[in-house]
Image 1 (cartoon, rainbow, N blue to C red):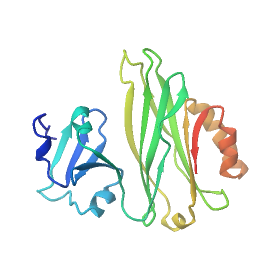
Image 2 (image 1 turned 180 degrees about the vertical axis):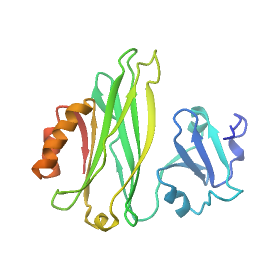
Image 3 (image 1 turned 180 degrees about the horizontal axis):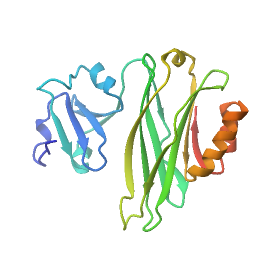
Image 4 (image 1 turned 45 degrees about the vertical axis):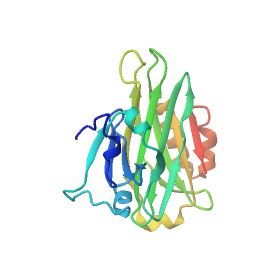
Amino acid sequence: MPQMNEEQPGTLADGTILTSAADGVPYLFQDGRRKRILSPAGVLSAGVDLRSSAAQQLTLSEEQLRRIPSAGVLAPAETRQFDSGLMHLGANHWMRTWGVLELRTGQVSAQTRTATFTWFGGFHGATYVIFGDANDAPVFQSGMHRYGVDGTVIGTSDRTDAWWESVPPADTARITCHAIFLTWAPDSFEKILGRWAESGEKVASLVSSAAAIAAVFAT
């Protein structure tokens, strides 16, 4: 993908796809601002045809991206957005999961950031998302997505990974809430998750059971 020179920030055309050279996160440039892309459907709903020969894609440095005002997240109509925010897991280890659920298709498009700001203290973290109904019963449970980072002086200490899943479209109308789990102990969390799934209890029960080994964002 072409790189943009430092002296070119004013030459961007509306509809340009900007990709961060640091973490690969894509953005759509429109009206002088950039919007984080969570789903290809969001780009299409904004009127951009990526198949067109006129579609421009550029890779930018973090400094270049910071010079372009952020306009939040680009998502298609009829979506449920979710975002845990950047959460501290302890020992200066951090994770964040965010994304969208497209209600008409059931497509889940998400990204997870895993980072440590210690010199040598790498860790393996995992994220897991549950969508629930008005009675707090689970409607859809994502798979567990696991990622590892190294300390800041020995390898990759900050990474962002994209992942996708599919909810049966017939079930999306039942979804009224969600819970995002970010854990620094994936194996222990899987055991708790298995017991919870067998019990048939509400989502709040899993939130309570996992509190000792996971940061949770629930709404």
